[in-house]
Image 1 (cartoon, rainbow, N blue to C red):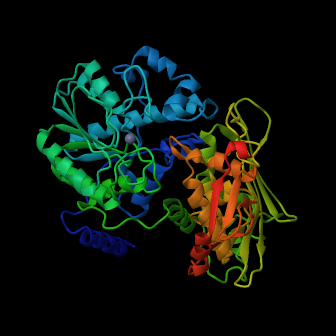
Image 2 (cartoon, rainbow, N blue to C red):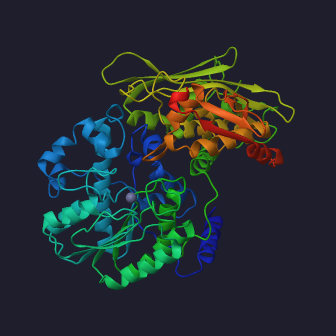
Image 3 (tube, rainbow, N blue to C red):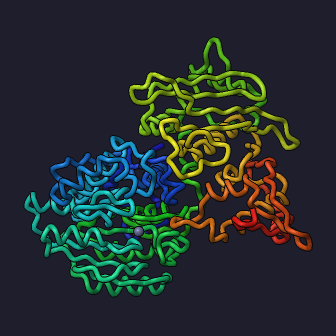
Length: 604
Ligand SMILES: [Zn+2]
């Protein structure tokens, strides 16, 4: 293995352009950086798994070793109080206050789990600053840059100001050096400016490029670039870097919401444009201490901004092209390779279950899911893939997994308890079977429910159609797990029938309707509902409202040359092939032939 590793390292040096050899930089992260809010993703389009995605990608590609991934200390109230008022720190103990700052509803906030995440993130920025100062080089904290937090209030996903707290703690320890903050998030650093003013900081330069104009901010070198593309943005960056004096410690807020298409930011950068931004900044701070934090980012690609910054700092060169991977699926593949033999295509006809027997997973008296997976093997998988850890952070414990064989399919149930409540609650239930298909055996999912009984629907928000309990926010993990299962068993595809629009919506990246014309109609439905002003909220597309409208018959469909009729949802089969299939021209043809729209209230 040694020669293989050194070859890989050499290859990386060549690929990175040889500006300098990869260097170990500290990267601070923690499992708790996965913000434990089940609705954060659907409400704000913020990817709660971003820190995990980047840490996994860096680690799985060999860009960092275990020793470089560092755990943040949870910052104490004494240190937080150097910046924040006692009243604000006390208010953060109330779920409704944290919920308002984080853009979710109070029922989703367990203060005892959510607040430690942000205290750890503050500790992470401080730890990164100490390490950067010690090495006169860069350090990264994978959650931080909470620049909208004021001494006495918070907003925009920022309950505590990690930057101001880190500066205040370092000052209290005698650090008297010059500090610069380069705020490259798409929004102005209003909270940071207020915190620095309250601290009486005169030695901190605060430079910012923003897509939105929030008016004059005292003490901030602000450039507003509404709608700027790569070229205009990079020109403004160069000008800002010329104005800033080199500092002993620089905080770089490498915001991900500058990407084109971000529902919150108002800039139009491409991924290569953002990587160029971070390359220029990294060159500018070379040889001096710098702390890199990610701040915002509300698109699917936002994780690649942070991944690209880390890659640049480690290898000395920016990433060459956007990463064409789903980071969750890529990581699950790595886990799978580590915990069980990879399936060969014919393992379904061979007895793959024997392999688990050899590994000691098989029960003497099984029911085996799909004839292969014992309860113990599934429990081990749920642990290895991080599902049980996430459920624990949502407040669940005492997990019990059962497997029952029957019709229509084999059933897996995961139960758990929460708090001091002795009641066992159903958290996960799925029913699956292997079905013959002309092209080979397919994993068919009869149903999947991911239940969060600890949550409760808040007043005024309609649940998704067909849902009796809020979800766990683990749909992507479930999809990736089914993919691994199919792969492990040598199946050609995973298939399901979406009973509701929102189910097909959640699956839209990995699955397509088997019938290309049906897929074309779904493409057209997405296209037209996305364009409906009534379905747009402050954070973009309102999926629950859209799914309700489809279920309630408030969506019309019009076929070229025909009168509009009420659209009735078609729960046809969705399929994800293990090996991708060529696209049929019928798909786009059908999409161009149909139009959808929302009935106005008075018409319904
Ligand atoms: Zn922002």
